[in-house]
Structures are given as C-alpha cells and as structure tokens.
Image (cartoon, rainbow, N blue to C red; front, side):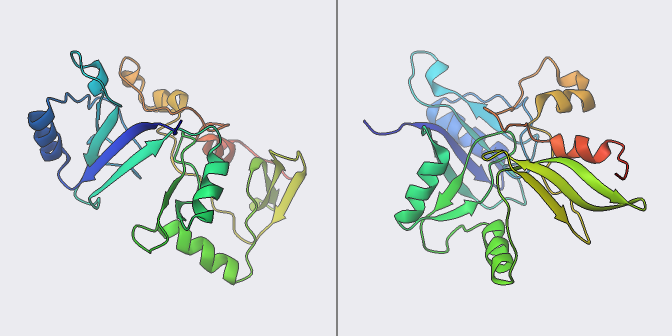
Length: 223
C-alpha cells in the first residue's frame, strides 16, 4: 500500500484572494488564527483548512497562504516512516533536495525533480561551500559556546547519532538556526495573548526550534 499524502499547501502572492477562490469553489473554510514560519508564508497570512471535518466531507488537511514576496507554488506532503530514508530514495531516483534541513519545528524534508526548477538557495550554498573545502557536520546538538577574552571562538556539541563530542574553533560563529515561532513554549513567552489560539508547532524537532537562541542568550564563561 502506498504512503499517504497528509497535507497540502497552496502559496501565492494574494493569499486572501486564493482563500476566497477555493472557499467559493469547494466550500472550504479557513482558520487564519495560527502563526506560521516566514519561510512558508507571511505569518498572519496563512489559513488552515480541513475538508474532512466540514459536513460529511472527506479529504486531507491543508493550508493556503503566501504574500507579496512569495512565489506561487503548490506542495504536497507525504507521511513516511523514515524521512531520511525517503530523502535518500528520492535522490537515488533523480530528485534534488530543495531544503536541506527540516522546517522549523517539523520533521519535514522537501525535494524536487532533478531539473533545476524550484531548487532552494540552501542547496546551492551547500554545494558551493563543499567545493571550497568546507565540511558540514550534521546531527550535532550544540551544548556550549566557547569564549575567549569575551569573544565567542567556537562551539562544543554532541553528535546525536554516535554520542561523540564535537569541538569546533572558528574566527566567526553565526547563530542561523531559524526563528522560534514553531516552538510553542518560546512563542507563548513572547506572545502570551496567543495562548488560547491555535499553534503551528509541528511533530517535533528534538530539541524544538529556538534552542540555539536560548543557548546564545545564556551567560557564558571561558574554561
């Protein structure tokens, strides 16, 4: 039996117009109270719909959003038992990764066909980095920022698969782990008024998105 499509996404430059169109055409109702990641849509411009819960309808849940800065596209998400294995299988069949890391708060990978349609910026940055001799260390949880003379000089961490210690010294350290809007706890710290609303926290990064910002905000000392 094939693996199921579990979510769909329609993104365009006029999200309100798109929701009006699909609502009129198919009778879909939308919940726009939840904030979503800026990588997906304008945070307040995304509407969730669940046709399977409207009347006697059946179907899968989805979302319609976007904004003036977002190119029009449609994505469907497939539920698989092993995301990494599915990604490797897609690449073996000629697919190319469009997002090399999971979306914030969600164990989600995206890929496209081997043509260069829709390839993400991150894909090309990774290729260029590796061509210049750079090394990417995946599956690493950062546990400490190294400090010397009041300057961050590197990181310490642990490989989450092998348990091995990771120690990197660098001239520059950049926190680029994304925002924390999909981390429900951190989101509510900043916006407690959203406590009664619907959140967009996904099935879960471990740790959830935003952990790097807590680490960066934590007082550090040289050892």
